[in-house]
Length: 309
Length: 309
Image (cartoon, rainbow over all chains, first blue to last red; front, side, top):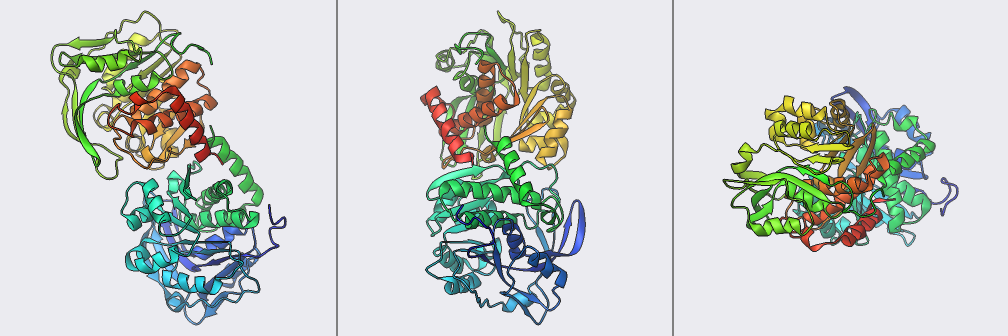
């Protein structure tokens, strides 16, 4: 490990959404749950490393949600509060639990989000969670420092359909791209995910990480492949934030070890998988708030037992 | 290993179909291809162990197809030739390559198949490939010997829908059940595959092996789980026989090692996965006919590299 103390060194920077979610799954429903891509990502990454969250909330953002992040020593000096309401999402999952159905999206303060980032350090590891690729480009401009070692991004079907050219500009400038299987097929028009990953590598990122939900993850990194199954779970209670928790675990581990080699990326993806497996076991952040780094290590050990032959 | 010489000891017995297939995939089409569940299974298992094939063909069955099996020292003394035509299947695959669409099924001699098995040994390992569960029960009656150590079966959506009660009688009498994810959901009504596997174990089999095509395999064996991804393949040329090749590789390895422990079942499933990965690379049995046990071992080694972390 490069950084012995996980909270020393330059923090991992994440730019993304902070949201208030309303979620219904076959197991129940919750109103006004703390959510958003940057929230899940930061919380997950904070098990490994110091995190700086870049985002925006409205004046209605509950102080207790802010405390949830601060208790994990997540730096919130770039989480802006502006007049208006916090981004809100309402959705539900049906039996297959593999894809969310959106009922309502209220962009609110996110509509005018224009990230201006002040950091008292030059970042080494940066994650651009799911936001408009035009914003991702603005962030890349601000964070383009010589210190930068590994930048990764996420996206969603909406941006692939509506802002493909901007997304391709982002992809030309990042080292890693985290997306799900449906998005990989949508972006490339290629049903075979191995070939889709190769096509996407051609757009720029050296590492393409395709999340397949209950089926695990397929990675093409530096033109080599690896594949991990998902940790077998009897109960997927709420899949919201699973992908962001995966990315947070993976980037947190990469960041604290300072090692982006193929072999370490495998371990990072395994930690990401374990993180996601915890995240889906209860509503919102509830489960992640109950676990420790020791629980992650224990399940990683178990994950090896159930997948190595 | 229990049997040092893979062709000594009691052969693995397989009961299933021998067929003439016509296949169209996005990569081309072939008429009159040698196929059938027992053919793929036997060929795959023969890389590991002696196999005895129980089945039926018509008078039109080409002698060269018989030789394909005999060259692998597969015992064909229980492959009956009766008057009429060999079972024929015609189907195609679309872009996703995950499920075959049937155009024509001609049962022909299979319609009156009544397996009467004469073996000059008491079998230890038996596989009931996909045939009518009523026939699977008849076979179980004939093979119920004190020597029997591990019996496994396969099935298909058609039997789950039309002969559920007979299938449940089969499941109450076998040690292993190999099925795909759609069949597991159809049989149990449970979308979560981990829970579906547990429900199916309640029907009888100690080992439930759920094949997920490009997503690998999920196994509940003796109430413990393991999961393997699929070997990442750029080209899936023809998925026909992938499931039977998987089962043949797995059962062949179990049979030659004589070891049905959890840990050995993992290795067996890994060999099954590697076998299936070769099977789909060309039409029908073409690819399996070009490879050797050394190729299987080499890909197994590679499979570890791409999936262990």
